[in-house]
Amino acid sequence: MSVKKSVRKAIAAAVAVGTFAMMPFGYAEENTVDVTVQQNSTLQGNVDDVERSLSKEIKEANELLTNENYSAAKNILEQVMKKEPKNMEGYSLLGWVYAGLNDENKALGICNEAIEMSPQNAIVYKNRANVYMAFENFDKAIEDYTKAIELAPNYVKAYSNRARAYKKLGNNEGALEDYNKAIEINPLDKAVYCSRAELYLKMGKYEDAFADCAKAIELDPKYARAYTVRSDVFKKLGQIEKAMAEAEKAIEVDPTSSLAYISHAVICNSMKKYEDAIADYTKVIELGRIASIENTVYFARAKMYLKVGKYEKAVADCTKSIELAPTFAKAYSTRSEAYEHLRKYGQALADITKSIELDPQNKFEYMKRATIYMKLKDNIHAVDDYTRAIEIPPAHDLAYCGRGTVYMLLKEYTKAIDDYTKAIELAPQNRVGYCGRATAYKALKEYMKAIDDYTKAIEVAPNETAGYFGRGDVYTALGEYQKAIEDYTKAIELKPNDMMAYERRAMAYLVMGEKEKAEADYKTFKKMFEKLTKKK
Image 1: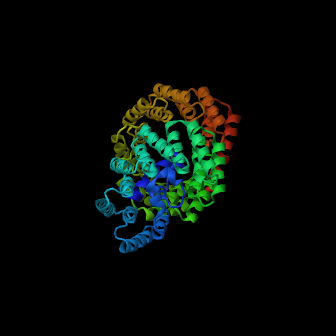
Image 2: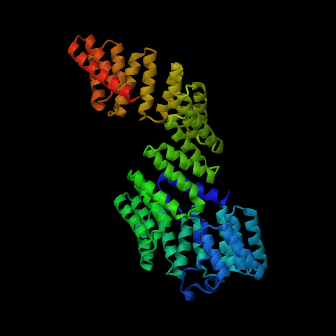
Image 3: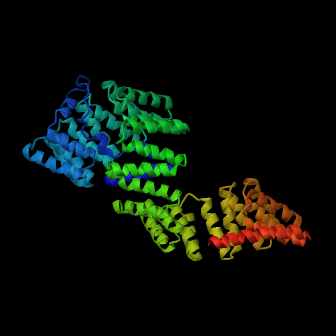
């Protein structure tokens, strides 16, 4: 997997669950040689002394790497190597450049050569480990970080980076041990405190996470990352206002921190402040410090545009995301959704099909395509897609409900009943399953079964109108007009703008001989209908 694809995959998952702010911007930012932070050399030992004393050119290349400007960094490092062929730190750093350029073989080849020429150099092992991390080979990364530690027992970066690898593998205790060791060696490293705080957050140790964030802020009151991590802890605890305050503080102390704006955007999203989230993502794009995740930021903004009904802008952002990452399935899926809102069903179908090609085991994409086929009145293909979704484990009630609905359109009521029954077995509180099956029973004139299912739907969701409306129709079919009127009335109470409930109740009143009530309901229905047709 490429470096950029790896980062995209992680951040896309984070966006889905609202934890975007917890994601790093790419491995280069935290794991290239740290030449900007002056640390206590007596605590770190010779390795960190070496890293701080690197040449001006390598420091410049490192800065370019931090900003993900791989091509410029490559040019500088190649010039350095021409002048200093034995500069193994620079040589192995060139390996990271090629990792950033998604050339895994070249990256590892250079690191391997550096190690062959300088087998006792801890830095070159650490740099090769960073390359392994970039390509998600965490076991190999751990081996190299361990070798670096053997060569330099007080090498803080090797401990903190190995902790990150352990964390990726789910070995939280191993990660914690390494972070503790790194802090023991250098209790002035704010970044390690933040990394340990993130681990504590993952482990549910919220007070420890708060303490580490406080320590990082004590070391550097303008360290934005510490505030964003503390924001994440508050968000996890459901204290959204406090989370927002921390994200705002992060922006205040460092207005150039992309991470701070992303953290703020995620919280705005959770508070349904979508326009504010859009403004945050726009600021991140303007800052231009997000090369490895630029496509994901456009994607995140597209999701916000969808929520505020700006579908053309959502399309534009998804298109930009796809240009930057042509294999990013979620961008095609989201653009398909935007096209669907715009009633451009052909384009929606093409995009969701591309998403399925890129992610063929995602059952929800097949379900999305099935709904588009239904809008195109292609029910046969809709059945096929719901069937494919059902075949991908684990079973999901919505796939059965969807296929049941298509069978209803095809008037295959027995098949529809079978699917709704399966949906109910999988999710006994599924109101749609009961209503769907009740409607199928009604079509087969099995009215008592229909009443039972509509009644169950009402029990499951008493504030939803479908159960009352459907049961009212069954009572009407059975000639039990007073019961029908009661159900339609309840539907109207819950949804006063339901014009069909007024029409149905009007008919029931008319049969019952209550002409004035029937006329009043019919007038209301007619007024609503005329208003609706004018809008169209």
